[in-house]
Each structure stands twice: as structure tokens, then as C-alpha cells.
Picture (cartoon, rainbow, N blue to C red):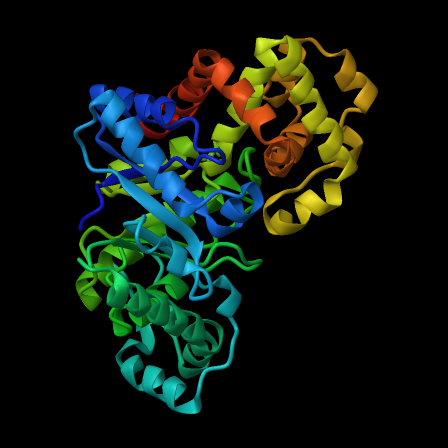
Length: 415
């Protein structure tokens, strides 16, 4: 199974927006860019909203059937490990192996020695085609690589082989994810990580590193855009070289997690992948849930009241809701509106505060991030929430479609 050159992770907390998401993808295809949709949902999200992996498969299949979509599409078991992958085996054909928690774990002395022996040819000064500055590699650096990443990639190998042994057709996409950590992986570290992946026999098609800067959920990139551009381009060149050097799949490409709404770096990524004619995978899970809340706010009446109540409860339970996302959110409490302020808002004021339009005078990134992690509140409303979504399906769907196509796909692919 091969993943297309361009692919888009269109996660959906409540499995209600499959058709709206797919309409955005199909618009991009009509505009000349073939993008493979990947419905992704993590075990964490399933646990919080009390859904099951098969619900994501049903959503994807139903959207494809309803719209007569003819292209390839995938269902991603997002951020899985050996402890939770079992429940995803039947419904998923894309597996994101999350090994961030294993970075820095101790490997055996024999495994470290084997890695050092295998990398002896790379010691000294050498250069990757396309990258101006040479890399200097010595035994100390390689030992640091082994200490940081060898156990993590060994775990990725364990997860991959577990899936392979249980998937009847052995036909699935594999991604390795190392993004939810504090320290970014440099391009030269990426090279040796890919060597470890190749040594484990993992046919990886996307890899999600931790980039320099902050990739907070649902808001724009925070960091030095020029530095990111250099790093992103060098990562692409490293991957290109590693594919040839280690015999990795030719479809291997970068995956950008928490990729939704990173508007300031979309033009950078677009220019670089076009310059080198390379693919890209971007995950945009949470942005769909935010558009559902925007749609409810715009619907007014009972739906607006529910949207306001979600914020009130989220504000009261902020620490609880933020804890699982501590590495990927950054909320300035002083900028959060008071409950009384939100109570006084019109539909448009609520939508303007939440909708990600940089420069809009009413846009509030702190408000947006808190709502982003507040989907647990909506899940607790149960049918009250989902029935309002269904009753306002056209309005909510139009928000989802517009957001994905106009604010994401058009920026990423110069449509």
C-alpha cells in the first residue's frame, strides 16, 4: 500500500464532518492537487469522547460513498503503541507509531556497539547533497544518538512487527512519530534515526519529527520562520538521501503534526516541497472540532448557548483539560475573556473570537486553545451536543469545508 505524494490528516472528534472534510479535499483535487484524505483519531481522543476506532472507519466509508469519491483514502490509528494498538487493527490501514516516550531509554551495550559498528563509515566530515554545510560525526555524537533514540526506534520496530503479524493482508501505511517531546531533532539526527528505522526493517512512509519552534494546537506557528525553513528543507534533503542510502520506501515524506493553522509557515513549506518536488503529510485533527463550535455559535439560540456553556465549563476546568496537551498549548490566562463577557457576546462575536483569522480584532488565540482542549465538555453533553450538530448540519459543514479548503489547502498548495 502506497500513500499519495500529498496527504492530509482530517481528524474529527465526533465523527460528524466526514462529508464536509472530503468536499474540501475534492475541491483541491478539482483545482489540480491530488491529496489523499486520512481520517485520524488517537486512542486518547477515543477515550475522552467514548468512541471506538470502528466509528472513524464508518465515518470515512460513509463520506466516500455519499460523495462518490474515487481516490485512495486511509484511516489512521493515531499515536498508538503496543498498549493500545489492538483495538485499531481491524479498522485502520494507517498506523502512527508514537515512540516519543521511549526517547532517552537505555539500550543494551551490545545494541549500542552494533549501531556504532554499522555507522563507522559515516564518521568524519561528510556532506548530504543539497545541504551547503558539511556534517561532522564522531563516536561521541553517535553514542549520544544511540542513548537518545535507539530504544525508541527499537520500540517502533516492536509495534510494527506486532501490527504486521496480525493484519491479515499486511497492507498498511506506517508512520513514526517523535514530535511530542521538548527538544527538536536536527537534520543530522534525522539521518541516523532513519538508519535505525531501516535497520529495524520498518517500511516507513511518513516521519513526524519535532521541529524547532512551538506547534501549539489550533493556532499559528511560534518561532523563527527562517530557522524553520532551513530545518524543513534540510530534513527533506536528508530524507531524499536516506531513501537511497538505506533502501527506505520512495514514498517516504515529512509529516507535520499539530499542523493545522500554521499559516505563517505554510508558504514556506509550499515553496520548499515545490522546489524539490517532494510530498508532505499534514495532520489537522482539532481544527474541525473548533469549526463545529463556530457553526453552533453562528446558529444562535440554543446552539449558541451551548457554545457559551462549553467555554464556561472549560474555563472552570482549565487545568484538567490542558494537562494532556501541556507540550502543545500555551494559553495566556490574562487574555481569556470572563464568563460575563462571553455571556454578552452575539453569535458573530463568539465566532470571531474563535475563528482563526490572523489580524482580526476580535480573534483570541487563548480562547481558541482552551476551546480546542475542551472537546471533553462537549462529549459530556452527549446527545445534546450531537443533536445540535445534526440539526445545524449544513451550517456547521460549511464552516468545516471553508476552513479546510480556504484557510488550509489553498495556503499549503497555492490554490
